[in-house]
Image (cartoon, rainbow, N blue to C red; front, side):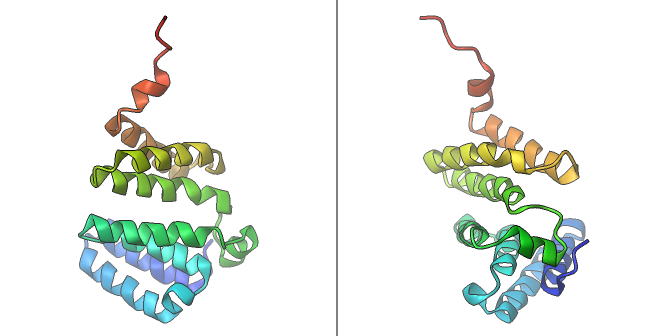
Amino acid sequence: MITDPTVLRIGQGVELHHHRGQREAARELFAQVWEDIGGEEGDPLHICVLAHAMADVQDDVHEELVWDLRALAAVGRITDERLAEAGVALSVGGLYPSLHLNLSECYRKLGDLGPAREHLRQARATIGGLGDDDYGRLIKGGLERLEEQLGEADDRAAPPCPP
């Protein structure tokens, strides 16, 4: 169970956006939290979780990409001990698939398919960090949809062509 007050506040913003459809209210809450944590100088866990959520409420895909890149940059400075201290049930390795999924989707929306495919490959490579729970299934389902959109699902599943 999450116990970190800042992560709980970010969760409130996620609730506003995903469950109540209040995107602007979520964005305003996230902006306040960003200010409260000291922006880029804040706790890497807070930066990662907040940037990951803030990306989802952006109207412009370029801004979404900026926030997703912030989240990815911060995750490398988080430890499993810090996650446990905050009450987050995932390991650091479990954060990467979603981060790479979101980055892949941003690059796909921008028509930049090389980086989109690279982040999709990185998401696939880190999928082992996810459990067989609702969150894991959500991310795996997102990867499957993105693979189809990028034309990668058939590439992975099809047998090699004979010479």
